[in-house]
Image (tube, rainbow, N blue to C red; front, side, top):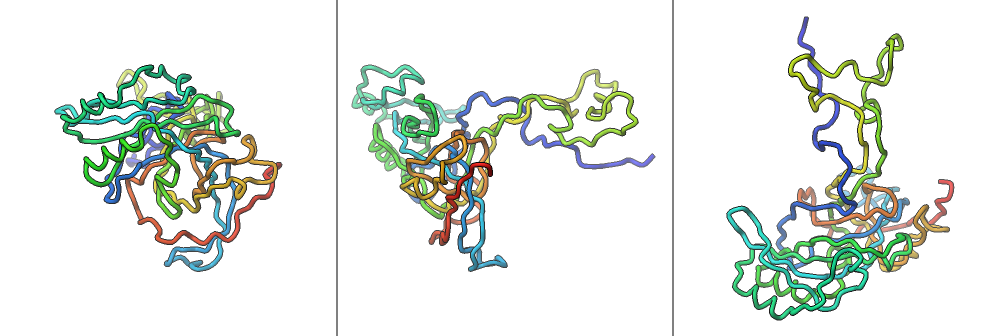
Length: 333
C-alpha cells in the first residue's frame, strides 16, 4: 500500500482548547519602539460593526484612489486611569518586580476588584526605587465601565500597560507624571496607526468533533453515527493522543489579531452610533475607534490594543479619507 500523506486536520497553534480563565486578556510580549516615551497599550469595549466608504490608500491596489466599501468595528474607548507604577529589574531568572508605587487617590469602584491601600506614601515608595537598576517600566491602569452605558457593570478591569521609547530615566519620569491621572486613546495611537487587538472570542460551549475540528462526515452506511470519528487511535501507545480530534469546549479562547488599521479616532460617539443604537449595546457616548475589519469577541467584550509586535507596514502619515460611515439602523440586519 502506498504511504498516503496529507496535512493534519486541525490547528495545534492554540492548545489545549480550554475556556479562558478571565475575560481580561493577558499580554506576554511588548514591542520595542523608537519614539516615546509613550503608553504602548489601551483597552475598550466592542460596540458592534458597520460599514464605511473610504478612498483606497494602497498604491499597488487595483482600486487605488477610488472609493471602496470596507467593514469596520466600533470600539468605545473611555479614558483609563493609572492606579500604580510598577518597576521591573533584570535577574538571572528574568524580569522581576522591584516595587510598586500606588496613587494616593483612587476610584472607589476599584475596591470592587481588589482591596485598595488606605495609607499610601508615594514619596517614600519613589525613594526606595532610586537605587534600583530598572529594566522595564509599566503602569497598572484600569478601565472605567461606569462611563459606558452599553456595558452594565461598574467593576473595572485592571491591566499592565508598558511604557516604551526613550531612555529608562525618561520612561520612569513619564510614568511618574501619569500616576493617578487619566490617559486617553490619543495618548496611545492616532488615526492611521497599526495595532494588535486581543480579546476573548465568542463562546460556543461544548461542541462535537465535526463542528469543532471540521471533520468529514462518515458514510451514510455507517452503522452507528455519521458525525463521529472512526477510532481513537492505534493500540500502542495505550492512551489516546492529543492529536485525535474529539468533542469539547469551542470558543471563549484568547485570540490575537495582528496589524489592524485604525481608520478613525473620534471624540463624539454620535458620528458612528446607528439609528436605535447598536444591537445589544446601545449608543456610543464616549470617544471611539474605528478598526478596519473584524475584532474577536461578541458585543460588550473588553478588547485590548497594543503596538504591533510583527509590524508589516508603517503607520500612515495621512489618514485614509473617510467618505461615509453608515449609521443606518441595525435592527433586523
